[in-house]
Length: 497
Image (tube, rainbow, N blue to C red):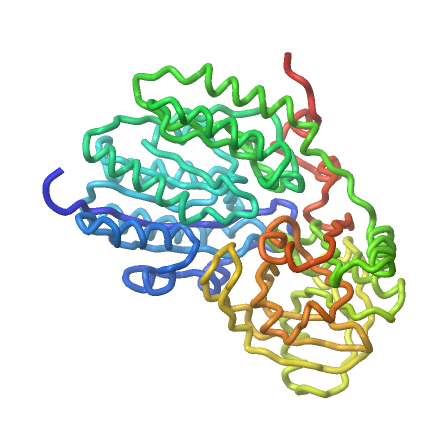
């Protein structure tokens, strides 16, 4: 192609937990990521994100002229209020329809749900396709936990997905999609996308890619890419807490248009089904987990020992409000230096800031949003630290991204420190500890509402990591959830001959 290549870039990144009682509003996107035009590059340049990858691609390819349209992202939570979701999608489509483009790239999550629309990403892609016509190549990247409508394959030329969990390859995922768009416009390839649903929906607790079943599937998919007519092979695990008609694992192949890849897709799907049982994990209850952590510390285990509460992990749509782990920690005794991260309670944060550092404070912690997951825990202590919630990630995931937690406060009673925050943002970066004045080497128990993303930066800093199961909106036992759209057999492992 002669001349500069005009590329439209937009983003709608959100993971919805259908079992959260709190819906998301457009204000949640404005608080996390609400950008367009030059402010996108200013915010994301040098970061390990999809948009950071897009900025790097454009810098390395000066013949490409990228225009950043609406780019919106919010921390995971409940379904998005439909009127707000429609407004975001309308702005993206209107921006694309108003220009003339040689190619379009969308950064999506894949587990987005509206309060009315259960397949909004497919509808968004369909509207974009209608706006640009049949001949403009369209690429989309997705999270590993995407729940993909197979019909998406008829709307795009390129699909790529994260291959690491914790997700430390977001930037590479975007660049892979953009490199394929470049090859299309050079007339080197004419790809299409095949999406094959896999009838299983595993929880993600054992979906890490350092070892285990997902690591094996990622390796198998990479092996299929040795064939020069398969440009991208990705196995998506699905998101177990998104109750939608397409909440299942998916094999995605981006391949030369005349290549029959059904046998390849079926081979990868069988491999996934054969490993379904390997994704199943049983976790100890909170009291057992705390007992084990104290035993390890008593035996000389390097500090800290991390106790994770994935059932209320904000990055799985948790509320940062359940009390199962804190109750177990308190009942075990107050002799160990303990940090609890965290509770989402804007009103309590405001009260702590009014009182000021050093002031005495008494409060009910947790149980504010969904008492069915545990009654509040009474706390008396003092306000040890107040922050404005500004931090910049320094770890491998979302590296370089500026984070706004809202105001936060550290409450302290003896050896116990509890952080409360105005927003519900996952704890997965050491900058969070720096912000709150927490020295992990002096901390015995580091109790965090988190799951696998925690391990990317904190795993090497902890002597041991113990996950526990407590009542919450993201339990390890999926049979506890009242699915309306996911067949129950997707939850039970079965072997395929």
